[in-house]
Image 1 (cartoon, rainbow, N blue to C red):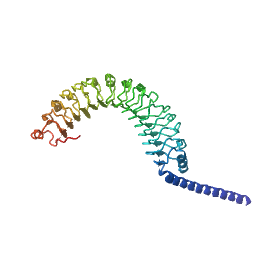
Image 2: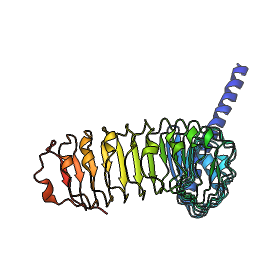
Image 3: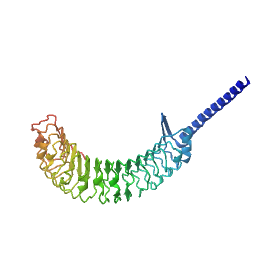
Image 4: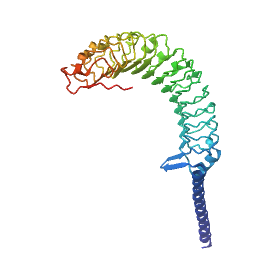
Length: 404
């Protein structure tokens, strides 16, 4: 009897302690939430296993105190610091070991990624338009990191990141002072964006990116070629607008390329260097001053072809080699005269001759059964010239509006 009584007393005491601890924990959690909301103006949302924590307070200089409060509340998975004007360092973020996503968009005072080294759970880090960020050396040893976005980090001059075995997406758009880039250690990359990196002189290690599907180096005007690009056997989308390449033989070797965006290349005179691109479905070619012929157009081109603002293009001869083409854009080809070959594009759905001032005759489009709209604003075709045409598609719209 006495033994049973003692057990009962012990159990009651333990239960009392548990109750006290639970009540204390609840009270401590409530106090931490109140401090985050009043001291930092934080926004909290907990839904199942996702704990979102957002803060753009001018009181936030680093994350030391902030992270301590957050841990008292729970295990944040998403930390959004977008627009925090005084945030200079991420020191303290190491305490938030449950974080899967870290977003610090437009944090102008942020200069360092201190605290990120070796973080165990981070899969996404976004620093878009954090213009003062220059020291990213702490981004290393992140075993789960898949996406890293430095777009618009204009103070970034070098990319000292390492040991990121899961990295798939690297965004460096508009990092205009980035002078060199070596991606050799990131063999799992699928997307690489270095568009607008005007100071970039070269990209080392391209040949090792066997899984890369998207590469954008448009307006990286300082690039001296793309050595190794011909080894990118999985590449699907390539943007090389305003990049001066010596020839296109390496690009013509890409077996799975479906979308190619070019522009501003003086050496382009015909499409013959690209004729071997059997998988190509979209071709965007802008402001190539010496393009004079569409001969060599890839025969499989079907979704879109744009040859815009090309002053030496006077005839569409050659375009008939892509009979399945659905959209054809010739905007701003001021000297284009002969469009007769479009009559052989039986699959054409949309045609733009906007600002093609020398085009005066569009009778070639009359027999196109699938053509839905022909945009003629600013062309040499007067509205009266299309009124008497016998159309294969009676629903065809001739649009004479001019958009800037």
